[in-house]
Length: 412
Image 1 (cartoon, rainbow, N blue to C red):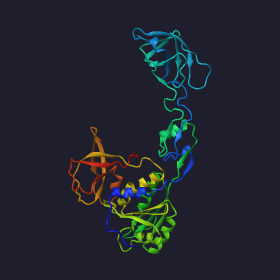
Image 2 (image 1 turned 180 degrees about the vertical axis):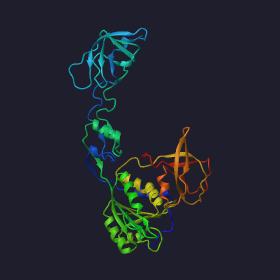
Image 3 (image 1 turned 135 degrees about the vertical axis):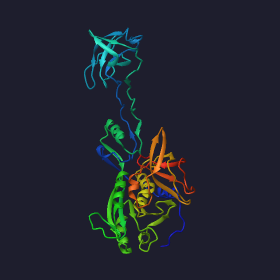
Image 4 (image 1 turned 90 degrees about the vertical axis):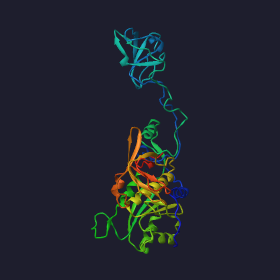
């Protein structure tokens, strides 16, 4: 199968990939299983939250007018007509002019009251409360529907469910949640030099770290990973293992996509009817990166070096997985940072340099994690960002401003 001579930019590659993504079907899952999943439908509130006006503080419900002019030296004295606790109860005592009702946080505000003063600004003696300051009308009252209004879209489809969203769904009494199906992702390593864990490592062989890195990343971004093993360096074995892998929603291979004599992945894909759309990308690391599609299955042939694998996953596979689930937010945050050291670079390719950013006096500063060889996975473990240097840019000096991608932060 003939290879394409031209390379495309990372931006063009991502646009091509996202253009081939198809939305997965929806399913219902228990709320406890919903965190990390993507909502497949809008969630509309059927109730107001809170359902009634209630107190935001432990204190006294009163009319603000009755505390006008109150000070520590000349407090307002109001008889206490009873107490209201949070939770179900009987008829709550009303607040009449010149009186107050003791109230606990979350308890419904009684009739006649328009504010709540907290205990810290009062003292109670002989059946009356002494109020030591003026109170604003509406103070410390949470209004009915203040958080959620009946009929409003509380969470839109495409939202990735986190802890706050889980609590909000619980407050709406949602026990089962409509979410997009998790994409099934097949992982296949290639090459006779790759050895799995637990096996003897001979001279010239390396551990199969890529499969475990990808497995972790796929789970992190909502996918359902399945590791298929290592394809040896024969066309027949590569074809057989890829045929099984192509039953998944996404196939991710590592290695075997360069122009080496024993790189059979691209040739095997042609035999299996996979349409190849991308073969090389103007980026470092990650130049040999294959993308294709067969039916609704997306194929990613990532380079074999561990850092190249991870950088390529972050830039291309991660957003594709999120888009398959209908996620609205798929971009990692990009910020400007001052470079703390020189970076040598030739023009012609976009570089993704592993970096460590910090915030000093409200400004971002960034330095590299050290040697940037594509086989140095430790440099990726130390990184919390990628320094992006455009293809048309050459050497960058310390003190210049660069763009960084925050890889440990959520999508925006």
